[in-house]
Picture 1 (cartoon, helix red, strand yellow):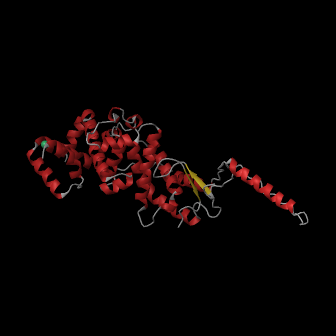
Picture 2 (picture 1 turned 60 degrees about the vertical axis):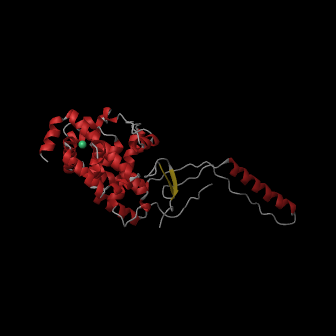
Picture 3 (picture 1 turned 30 degrees about the vertical axis):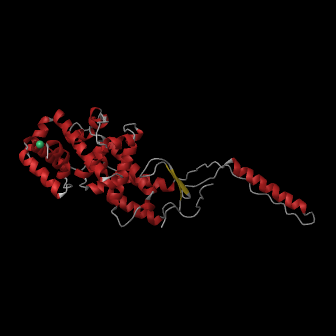
Length: 152
Length: 198
Ligand SMILES: [Zn+2]
């Protein structure tokens, strides 16, 4: 094993992520090579030092601020505007027309005036009915989910 | 319309909410420590942590209670951090990244080491290691932090970062290389002391 090969594997050896045979070969090289064993010592020291870093202390009031942020998420009522395609509005108009024609072709029947509800151009959706995520936690891009989505 | 809007149910029931809040209380200290190592300063760490908990809450229905919550949150936090840096335009597109990491001829795409996270460096002058971490490319830094500070195995890091074990191995190798280079350039005495104390 040459220096280049050995050095590429030092980190994995250090982390115990190198297979038995490979690990033996790298260790063998380290016994013979001053340059690589110097690098090995440095890497070990570095890993140890990183592991000994003391955890940063959370600032005062962080827990409350986090809880408040999460609670805002749950209670915030937000309106999401969804554009209804023009085709849907046209289809609704046709349906109204068909209803009126059917009524006029049977004059003796009592006609009850029926009007379809107007097609809304937007849906008012509350936060607890559907929600838009600005980003999928595991990937980029927006996601729109119904509230019941994925619930067990 | 391509989807139906469910009118019933809440995003999270009261029970879920209470469960989530309990998990938050149990996990936020450790999560803050991780966020601090990834961002290098208190203000960004708090922003990142808040972002992560909000994402976690929205996707709480995807959480498998059989698994440790802290690990699930770490995964969200690491991804939120990469997104944050991407928004800032600090990361190059992923495909280029992947090629450079996994290709045979590894071209050092990033000159990240020459343009470390300025704010991170400015706020960490008292700690050579934290300053050194700031000089490491974010994906490499994340992998090193997860291995050395969080004590994760490569397989676990791969799951957390949504990548392969081979990529993790490469990221850690290159991250430590960048860290070592930075430290020996800027803090040679510190490195010597560190090795002596071994
Ligand atoms: Zn050698």
